[in-house]
Length: 105
Image (cartoon, rainbow, N blue to C red):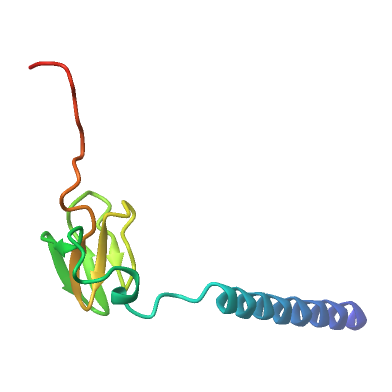
């Protein structure tokens, strides 16, 4: 019984080391964004200050839709429209239309 437990513990340790190595390799190939300014230049016409957000512990909570996304620094919301930039919310699709129709009213 002890030999089986020892083998199971050894296998668990090997699997944990492999998972840590895989996570390190993933971060090496796909690093997280350092800052928002590297992804979207501040002079872009598509980036504007957003509304309907509140400050929470280490980020911003978007209150625009029912999902109430928590956005840490540099993260985008579930909709991929709003992002946390330096503790404030920014919208990425300001001048773009949401819907267009060609038939007359």
